[in-house]
Each structure stands twice: as C-alpha cells, then as structure tokens.
Length: 366
Image 1 (cartoon, rainbow, N blue to C red):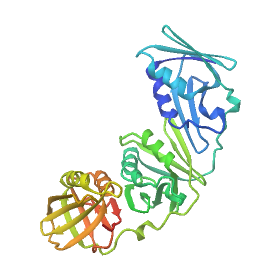
Image 2: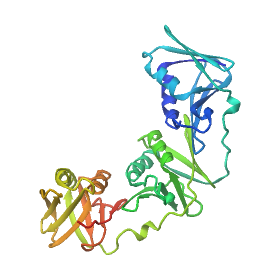
Image 3: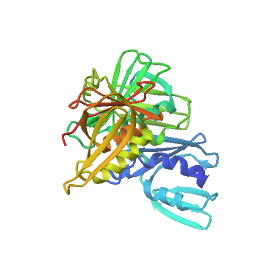
Image 4: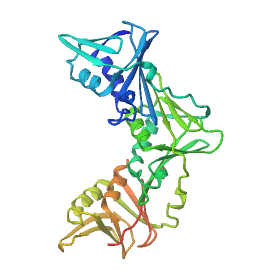
C-alpha cells in the first residue's frame, strides 16, 4: 500500500477521526486508525466500539491496500509538518514509512485484519433535516447532559422524533434543556433515541452550520449519519428517558422579560461573592426590577439590579447561577423570558418570541 497527499488534504480527515480514539484501550488496534485505499478513495476509520467515524478523501496517487497506523502519533506528525508539504506514506509489512520534505519517520502498524468491523445494523427509520439546525439544537442542549451518573440514561441526549419535528432533550436532574427543530422527512412512528455523551460530542465536532440537508439512519441499536465525505455511527443507550414534559412547569404565569446580556453579566458579577461550592444566587422580583443577590459564609454580599419588564412583586427564589448562565447562553434573542409559578417551583427560561428552545432550572434552598 502507498499513498501521497498534501499535508492540508490529509490533516482534515485525520482531525475528524482522531477524536474517536481513546488514550486507553482494551485492544491495542483500537489505538490505531484504519487506512484503506481503493478505487482512488482513501478511507480513514476510527472506533472505540461505541462510536465509529469514517472519513473519505480522494487520492489519485497511490497503490490500493489497507493498514492501521497509530492514531495520535501520525496525527501529531502530520499536524507539525509545514504547510504545503507532500506527505508520502508507504507500507512494508507492518512498518509504515512517512516521508515529507526532508523529514523521515518509521511507525509500527498493525494488520488491517485485526481491526474490528462494524456490523451494518438494520435501518428501521430515516430522519431528514437541516445540518445547521441539528448542530444548533445540540449546542443548545448538550451542556445539560449528566456526566457518569448512575442513572445511565441521563449520560446522553434524547432525540424525540414525531411527525415533522425533532426534539433534543438533555437533563442531569438539576436542570433540563430542550430544543426543537423541523424535519423535512420524519419517522414512520414516534421514535425516542438516547445518544451517549461521546456520540453527541463527536457529532458536535462533525456537524457544519450550513443549511444542507442531512439524513440520520435509525437502527435498532445504532444511529448513523452519512455525508459525502464522512459517515458516523454511534450505539444508542438502551434505557428509558424520564418523562421530560412532566418537568416543564405548568401554570408558570409570572413573567419576567429582561435583556439577556444584562442578566448574564449581573449573574457573573454577583456569583463572585456566592458560596464557591454551591454557586447559589437569589432572584428577587419587583415591578420593573429583577434583583440578583448572593451571600457567602464570610458574610459578604453582592446585589445587582437589572431592568425588567414585569409587574410581579414579592417573588424570591434561589438558583444555581451556573445553570442560569448556561441556559441564557443557549438562547439566541436579545431578550430572555423567565417564567415562574411560585417561590418553590422551577424556572422556565426561553426566548420571548417562541418556545422552540426551553430551559428548566430547579430551585435551590439558600
């Protein structure tokens, strides 16, 4: 096997797949990237047996074959080479020679036969939607996923598809984020899929912000995204996601409309004097004013006042400032709408003009 590509052309697919490779592996071959050259196309494959990424690039100068190359070492070498240099890779047994300008490297590879093959699972449904819309929905919800929670089904992101809409939902039990996007082709029946955390993060790296249409293939235990240059698949979490609609507060009729950036900066300043462990702040609502108050064990205090469009008076409720800040950062409009029911219930944070992006933050006792 032999192939030659410029550094820039080779670096792009390498960057796409190398993130899948874990530093610690149960099988040595999983630390490698599988290179397969056939019919003028070089395919790079990386997997950790949970997610798989395949990136393709045209390669007219080469001889067909297959080999696995140490992922991190090869990526760091290519990344460190000067711009415009031609990278020539040749394989002799399990030794890989890399020549670029006046640089020479020899790497130890492993046979392509040792690389695990991913079974093509049966496709039970297909979803079509805008790539940019899916990326924005992931960006607006992924931060609320749990990390290493014993409730394993929370360590991922729910895709709830029905009719012509797809909801992306994440929660860690303290807050919930929901973003809704339109489907140009929806599922045959209502589908709920839980994509694991790593799959979500890799998709976020992979997805572009443009409006081209992409297709998600839904298998019984896998989700696969196919594009001309790359395909990605992830195992799904086999579990039942909680009833997220029951978490969204009903009857939250106390509205507070504020400038989003003004509230964010007020929270960022006030939290400096909050308890460092719990980062709690108290929101106090009076007509035309939203007050942010923070205390700490040293008896220090911060009070920030923000102009607000509201007629509510006498409402006081505590929250984790970090959760409020992340919810506000996920919105896109100039103003934010905060909806409350009473001083003991969750807050609903969304854009004033629509409810496609909704964030629920649980109250905390201060």
